[in-house]
Image (cartoon, rainbow, N blue to C red; front, side, top):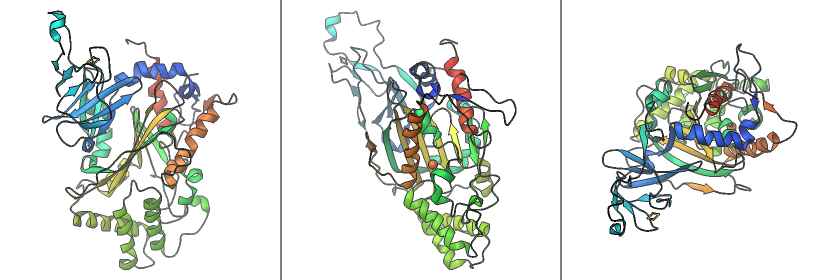
Length: 443
Ligand code: FES
Ligand SMILES: [Fe+2]
């Protein structure tokens, strides 16, 4: 069953369950999506010095990304001798040496050692013994890769995302923490848990007390898309209109709780600095302050705290820029980010081998730090998440994922019906994905 592209705003959109369950669909993604699309391989700060490398695995491909004095290189991480994967994990290298028989490659991928080369006589002379290069580029402090040797540049591919997100200066943020989880769901189920705000009322119901209006709108921008609270009538600090409760007479306490709750139960998007800055409104603003003015004051206290700590503050990140960006971007195919003034979260999901019911899911919390003040972040990797907690917000989102995957396998479920107003990120994602996987291999 095909995803039906809407011709009118409220047409029913259907996403076939086979997109999430079928091995054939996953095989088409492996053949037609992953080798042809730009994708985030790592943060730049994960490989800070020339010679630092990291391995990025996607479906059956393994790619090594290395920083050099000139920039970043990426190569298919496979030895042309007898096919061993060469590098693993991350670390520092002066060259890439295959541990099987010592064939060695410099950081530009050139073969520099064939052990006992004389055994071949001159038979290897015409052979391509260098590593196969993968295109790289940088945006937002991320190293992106594309296995297609030619084609759209990263900046062409990302358009119009930078127009909306450049103001946040992701390149000046650094990792605050990093999670790498192996999850029992399709990679798209994991992505889609963060591609709409429609789930907040049910899944994160504890936020309704002070998050303001949780009703969202969402829009496509080519292959990418975003959602935001543009129609919100009630700002943060007030209860969601769903609760049918009056706003508190003194908004300050609730706004402080809002930032504190996000910090204590998530530790991403907003920051610990935001939570501390929010507390200053208790001292500096009157109890009857207007909610919007209170929010503006929190942001201003946060900016001053960031500047005092030497973190700088993005000059183009005005309130208007924040409104224009909205709250959440899906960057096709497997990036989702929610930016804020002082920090951001970035999610990435990818298939774990050939099984459509498994994925590797990364969560990166980013924050501005003063020069040299960024923490040394160890990736927390978990192959089994059962019984583990990663903070209430992430736990609540994770709880839906495996249950969605299980429910979709029911004989009673045939297609998803995304909300045409609030879940456009999801319908747009599948519209573009379907066009790619349906294309002829060499089209
Ligand atoms: S497979 Fe790499 S040196 Fe033999
Ligand atoms: Fe969520």
